[in-house]
Image (cartoon, rainbow, N blue to C red; front, side, top):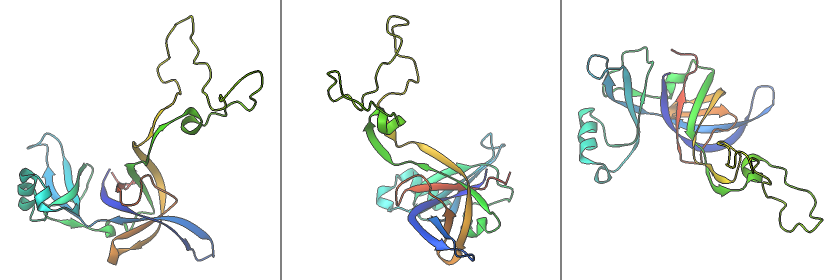
Length: 209
């Protein structure tokens, strides 16, 4: 599924032609530079490697500095591979947000915000107990029995318990394109996308093959 790399700028809201207030997420998508074109003959599979975001040369490994120089571009912060591009892109080509000008719906993948170690009420929306009578003390947010006490005497795999929450890759599909500002490479999508401000996202076209 082809797409581009971007960065989450933040959220805002705009009014449409009917006066409806639409909450939007602002993404800076591109410009992305093609740094490598992989083919079945040379690499065993067909894909395009693209890069986005400037990075200081002193903070870039020498191998990657040479890789970027071969593509005739400066060191980049984010590098990914995507499959499914129909057009024959070449190394050094630059793709901007105009790539999505004919796509009304887009998918966005990103790393969600990390919440740290959380209990079952916040992590799995447990209701807790509403009464602290009969001698119960500070047990309102406890998970309760885990089941399987005498048999099978173990905790079932996948049981909803307290643990690390967030900080994982999430994909939100079918977000409506509200507006494209090509001169600033800005893309406005209806609703929210995962990640914090400044985090990298991958915007893909669900209808293209």
